[in-house]
Image (cartoon, rainbow, N blue to C red):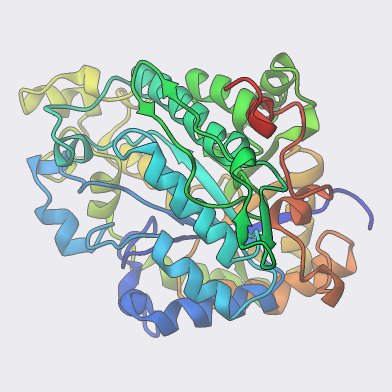
Length: 456
């Protein structure tokens, strides 16, 4: 293999509209089938055959209800509401695949760590070690109200909760059961050796958990740890815990942000290579440049500006104002606080603001053209921007994934950037596949200090 291998994920969500607003209306789009088991199984087969490493499943625990002070627009757009649990589609997808991994988004802010740890161990067993956990802290105000809180937990406190949450699940996954606790001794009637299973007796600021973990050790023990972040607090947390980081970066900040994550890992006693960084990317590919551009233009014709306002929780209504107004002027005209708008957006005109917040059509990590051109772009991202992988943004289900598999995967395999399927690799866990080492966390990871019941 020549050059850095691409980590290739599809960005998905168990909902009609994820981040490409309005495109559920595209002819032939299957988004309305998101409630069908067959939808997820068909998608899984496409991804595995197309060389994808994983499907990255986003999630939210509340409705987008900031824009226009309610969720009516989100419902009309099908924008992440309705949405279903991302964890429950994983066994169905795993049943029809052998190599495809699953990155599952789950928040540390609201649900207890003990039950979550068991669900993840169960999925790691059922998939034979192909699951990862995208650690998030939740950002929607409605989510907080859904769990009995008056308002959103402050940002930095959410990260303090996440730190302790991780500590609890690490104790359960790594420390509660010894590697050889399960003996399955039929002759003596002993399934598990009680001397090798223990309580964790965690008593902390936010959680109190006795244990023991209810699941026996799964293939990875601790699932592969993903994190989606770009904030200083998030970078610090990722440097300590994350193995794969999903981040949104722009322009000249790409390389410096990647390096920030790797420095954070080194500051926590880990190797810089213990963290791999991937970004959201868009690919429009066809036999000719003109055909690829025509596909981009056809898809873009279905875009919804309202969807972008909903998804970014716009604190004012741009549709009420003439295009000549700046964002600050429009916000003040509505009697609202301009401080609720990020500083870099306040001086923009309304049309400029609309373009800036719609991530589905940004020029960053967007490639349009022939298979060779797309492969060139991806190699540039890997070698110059220094990223390790992409979350492929979906515009059409299943054409986005099918096009990549048909046009781009063969070229990347030819160039040594993607590996061809190998029956000998079918037994590998997600961690082994992406890092080329054992199924368990590295010894430098903080979770491993609990292995074998140490430091409980």
